[in-house]
Image 1 (cartoon, rainbow, N blue to C red):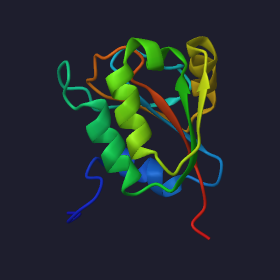
Image 2 (cartoon, one colour):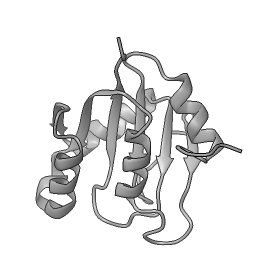
Image 3 (cartoon, helix red, strand yellow):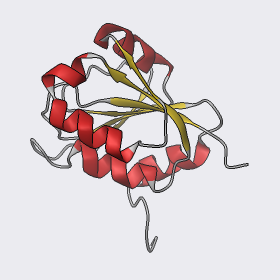
Length: 131
């Protein structure tokens, strides 16, 4: 048994397999997931686990060089947007329309579905390299 870090086996495996430029989506409970993309469903009930809890766990293990969020998050979920910016303070964040965001998910290695029920609580993390 792992002593620390990501305990969810499929999530741990995806993070370990990511290469430079690969995309990982952390999503709210309602984001549509393209059928061909791996779904890692962590949702237990509304709010559990939260988007930020899952993001924090992933950021402990994944080197992220940039991120994408929906433009709509700023207006519809400003507190969540501020929390996300704080966590990604040293990482460039690109704001794109939600429809473009959804289209990008088709190129992700996986979509991690949380129990979050806050509007637009989604982020695409772009894997970097540690050297």
